[in-house]
Length: 337
Image 1 (cartoon, helix red, strand yellow):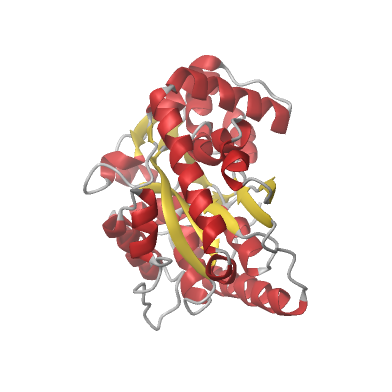
Image 2 (cartoon, one colour; image 1 turned 45 degrees about the vertical axis):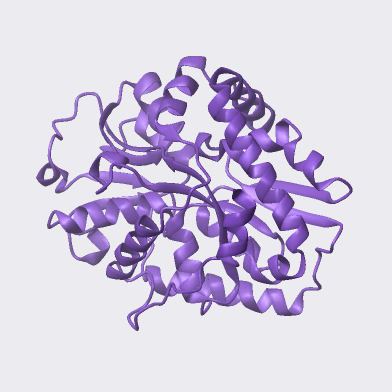
């Protein structure tokens, strides 16, 4: 298993290719269609519940909705730049990476969807109890540039540690959550920084120890884990559809908060349809309890994600500007109210 070198260059290449594709490919979206991508993660319950309960279709009426599940934040951002999606539910780190690398023109934040929902889990027999114990260890996190990847690498840097590809002695595996689960179960890694439900699955199914939840190490004890972002061209051309989507997104969030048990069942049913696997009810319940579902946008925390990504070299070395990351922010806030 190889560690990916030249991370910043790789991310820049993905964005460049995607922008090129968006030019040569004919646009697929129109006023009667909207395409959305999200993850099969519990933190993405807002789009999942909204789709399963029909909130989006009810709100959008005759507008055709195409939804697709993707595996990572960078992949979700790539679909926007390649003009194969109009909306994406994604973490703040891949959004910031994509926004900055594209010159701030292609994507905008429309709403929040969830806070928290990631943990650092170690093996059952692990002696890891403090940051210095991570020296020489093998740690997994989903995909280069994903929010958990940025958080892990920042945590190491803040505690004087470096990944192996930067001359340090901590080996980082950037792989899919399903692969992390398999390798963790075989003791192939010492720890994992992962979202829900993977974190709780490692604890409940394989005896892992939750060393801490990520929000525990954030200044305000919370962090944005899922944002609703849109392709700027589509958002500007179809404000009526975007308004309706944001309203349905809020309805989904409200229903989740008012009906937690039903929301858990809805996710279990969706997960089985998508993966063919049945999640344990206790795992889902514990996972839901770690997450705050909200449309509120924590601008300070997003800025902190950007600072961390920049310090890691993900945003280049020429500075960055986040002044225009929100789509018509005043109008959208009015819609949400």
